Structures are given as C-alpha cells and as structure tokens.
Length: 182
Image (cartoon, rainbow, N blue to C red):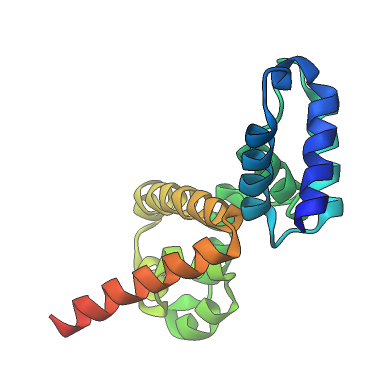
C-alpha cells in the first residue's frame, strides 16, 4: 500500500469517526499517514479497505479501528479456518497410531506448526509407546497448551510488517549463533 492509498484508508476512518479526529492538525494527520503506511506497506489496499469497512460496520464502541484490530481482521479474512488445538491433537493421535515403527514418515506428514510443537519423530515414537491414560491426559494436555501458545505466537508474528519480521529473524539468528558458539 502506498502513501496515497494509506491516506485514502485514513480518510474513510476519519469520515466514519469525525468527532474523534476533530482536533487533529496537519502534522497529526501526516504522522498518522506515516505510521499506518509503515505498518501496512506490504499489504494489499483492497484487503485493508475491506477490513476497515467491516470493522466500521460492526463497531458498537464508537472508537475507530486501531492498526492491531485491522491486522487481526485481515488475518481472519486470509485464514478463516485455523486449526484448533483439539484438531491439532487429532492429527497427532492419527500419526501416533502408526508411529511405533514409522515415526519418521508420520512426523513428515504433520503440518509445520504441529511439527514444531511435537519436536521430532522420536517424540512421536515415545508417545506411541506411552500408556493410554498418560497419553490422553498429561501428554494431550501439554501438547494442546503448547500448540495454543505456538499458534498465538505465529498469528502475532504474521501481523508484523515485513521489515520488522526480517529484523526479528536476524536477531533470533544471532542469538542461536551465539548459543552455538558458547
């Protein structure tokens, strides 16, 4: 989204909430355009506009949508059917049924987010050997809690502008590199 498109989005918000922006001067408007442009520079203006208009249509608070709310709504539009923690555990349970001898193949079939929570194929094999009570209580509970956290973190990371994502990846890479060197 370019700055002109960003200004058009903010004009929509200002039109819907005129009292909220009544006291702003030109510098405030320019600052808002710059901030919103930075946060949505990699986004499609149509998706942003659709999200803003939908949020305005559903608003009952009287407050304009924030950048975070617009990003959240955009994510819902782009990923309307996110895997729940129970569904994710279902994938794991299915993989466990064949993981005693084929854990590597079963691990490879799992979606990436689930793989990151499980850890590795050896973990699948160990879980497949666990007794049923432990599997359905302790292991399932721990997996679902970890999956919930991982999914939330991934959703939050997906909302970030590309330049911030790249910087975060660099920082994480340097931390890992430093840990390996120690």
